[in-house]
Structure formats: C-alpha cells, structure tokens
Length: 193
Ligand SMILES: CC(C)(COP(=O)(O)OP(=O)(O)OC[C@H]1O[C@@H](n2cnc3c(N)ncnc32)[C@H](O)[C@@H]1OP(=O)(O)O)[C@@H](O)C(=O)NCCC(=O)NCCS
View (cartoon, rainbow, N blue to C red):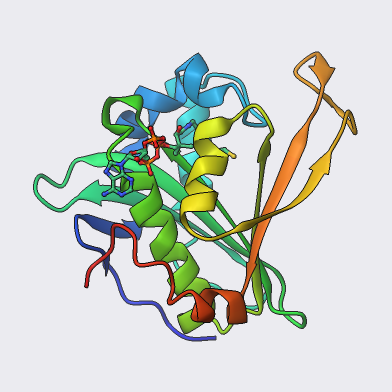
C-alpha cells in the first residue's frame, strides 16, 4: 500500500490526520442535531467526540482494508471545518467508500465537494480503486448533491429497508467507477488546477 504524505492539498483546503487537539472544533459541529440527523449517531458530547478522536488519531495510513479519518482545515487560517472518512472495503475487488461532515458555519461554499473530490483522487490515483461508493439518507439532499457534483451515479434507493432513528430508513447509494471518473476528467470542481 502506498504511504500517504500530509497534508493533502486542494485549492482552499488542507486534509490532514486528526489530532487529539481537534476534539473541541469537531465537537462544535458534531454536537449539533443538524449534523447528526442522518448519521448513525446522536449529537455528541465532548466526551463522545474524545472517544472517537482517540480512534481516529491512529488512522493515518491504510494497510489492506483499512480506513482513514481526516481533518479538513482552511488553508488561510488553519481552522478545522470538517472531517472525512475513507475506507477500502474490499481490497481484492478494489472497492472503497467515503463520508464527510462539515460545520454548518462553512456550508454552501463548496468545501465538502472540494474535499470529497480529493478523496476520490486518493481512491483512484493513489490506491488504484475500481469503484468508490457512498451511502446517505434519501432526505439528506445536501449530501447527495455533493455526490452528484462529483459525478457519482445514484445506484440504489433502498426503500424502508431498515429502521433508523425511530422511522423507516430510505437510503441512497451513489458510486463512480474508475473509468467513469477518468472519462469525465475527474470532474474538476473546486480543486487545484
Ligand atoms: C453533507 C454536507 C457535507 C454538504 O455540505 P454543503 O455545504 O452543502 O456542500 P459543499 O461544501 O460542497 O457546498 C455546496 C454548495 O455550495 C455551493 N458552492 C459555492 N461555491 C462552490 C464551489 N467552489 N464548488 C462547489 N460548490 C460551491 C454549491 O452550489 C452548493 O450549493 P447548493 O447546494 O445550493 O447548490 C453538509 O450538509 C453536512 O456536513 N451535513 C451534516 C453531516 C452529514 O449529513 N454528512 C453526510 C452523511 S451521509
């Protein structure tokens, strides 16, 4: 597996491993109902975030079917504005998945799209993946709009397939194959030229 060097740089952002000191800025938005609403967790206390951060600080490199947790910081100020998830789910079939959460204070400026684009580059260019997918609640319009901006296709709509936070779950799967990604030129949206 290739060794990653940090920070990963995009036009406006640095993507870097999460550190213990990041617990407070992550708590600032993981504590919000708006951020937790479609996640598998409820709004987090600082202690909850510390527990997660302690796991994430070890996720700097991937070996086989591992996962990365990355902080997203503004280049201009170093401020942490979001966090990312990247996981190789099947090394033999070269499948990976991505996820993202951003502070509502910075939403609507394309930062999530820019950061997720870097994750797709990581998947296809660095790790040689064949397919990258992401799942989201069908009501999470902001999330699936990010995926569509990146050229990911809606592959599945699971209807009432599970119970989620007390109601039926409606879930979308989005994905992009490496050849689709290359054909569309890696959708150069919000990234370094
Ligand atoms: C999902 C989430 C990360 C999306 O955040 P977002 O701010 O909507 O996404 P972006 O940062 O890419 O911003 C996109 C918006 O900025 C606009 N934008 C401005 N400048 C832009 C640029 N340079 N590039 C791309 N979009 C830009 C886009 O037009 C878009 O607006 P629109 O949705 O009105 O069309 C955010 O809603 C979130 O953190 N939600 C809570 C956690 C969550 O649910 N995560 C997903 C779990 S599956």
